Length: 143
Image 1 (cartoon, rainbow, N blue to C red):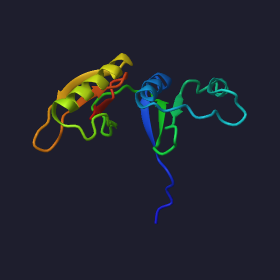
Image 2 (cartoon, rainbow, N blue to C red):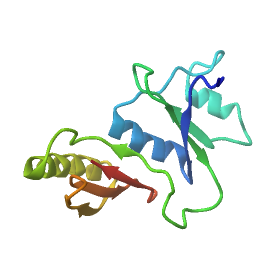
Image 3 (cartoon, rainbow, N blue to C red):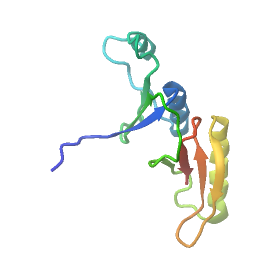
Image 4 (tube, helix red, strand yellow):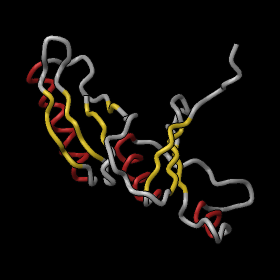
């Protein structure tokens, strides 16, 4: 029997707020209320002089999916990330209809600062998906 009640997904990055804002716009999530005693997250951040700008988080409005947390780390991204997010835009669609929906969503994400890497065409086992990168080069699939 487990005692785990919830999880969060953490991104290591150079600019937590910048990366978090990208993902918040991608997913349509919201910034939670600041901690008790602080009117804004900026006020809270300024209260941490040695750690200003070191972290940022947001949640899905209904609170049904994990919180995403972004933390500053000194090292840059070197290799392919071992865990990635699949952004499900084409669920239930196949063929050209699926690719058309993925390309339209890709254009929106590129306008936010994402990078289109390549289309992975459908094969005998999988439908088409788009490999993309966020604004710090973290890979994700648009599928």
